[in-house]
Image (cartoon, rainbow, N blue to C red):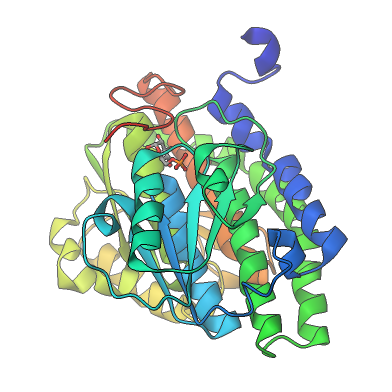
Length: 367
Ligand code: G6P
């Protein structure tokens, strides 16, 4: 294993650092063909016929779906719902047969996701797209359309590079659907392509923050709980950050859209509850800042990931790490890196089994 690991201590760390390559390999497939249905293997107008999108997935893949909902509704102007596969498979969900089913699965073998896909077929959905990292696995084989992410083999149980490459696939889907509906003109398309081209570099920049992030690890290692906050498209990234922390450090972590703080979780905030905030400069930044004031007023300690444009300064109980600037629409992908690294370094500080956390499996092929 040491040969495969190279300079890294764990597969998870290696896979976090492989993201610029995993992303550029995945992006290459898009840059070649442009934002076109061909990228998804669609040569018969299936995507063009979609009247909405329903995303089905489990675990980290589900959070990729939640992120995509923001893009699909804003860019493609289509209704998008995202559902945990184990719930969907057992309920009588609303059906519009023209709503495109999108399953997300790193392994392509997760039983609940496979069964949810079968359920969607039973209910009458006409087209199923699989976004998957393992070729010829069960879920893509059972789907009409496929986009293979090119993350390479993922060994760490906690998913990292599969998630960010799924986001590239989903972003590409949003633009493709948007183009087909006349909502993305040539100029906008060029801008989106440019954003994709810049992405691996911005992700590399975020990876370079590792020494700063590891300096935060001790502050979390002794805690029982942590809260993650984000708003808008960064809320699912807060969810993913909390999941990573739970999975590999066994610290209880929850994520909230920052605007919901006052409806409950604020009651939990004291000096023993570190609060991680994903706060890049976007249209919601001023709102996030006032949510942070609410935390400070209760004695909570803030750990903030903010780009330079956010204009935060460090103070006693407010720690700030500066993330790359001007990332724009792909900001959730770039802001995934610091929350992955944070979980990883807290796990190191606690001495847990990073690559094989207790009670968890890489791929869950039973119910
Ligand atoms: C397991 C893994 C997670 C993964 C989830 C879904 O719980 O531990 O890392 O996100 O399954 O897996 P999939 O292969 O369907 O994306």
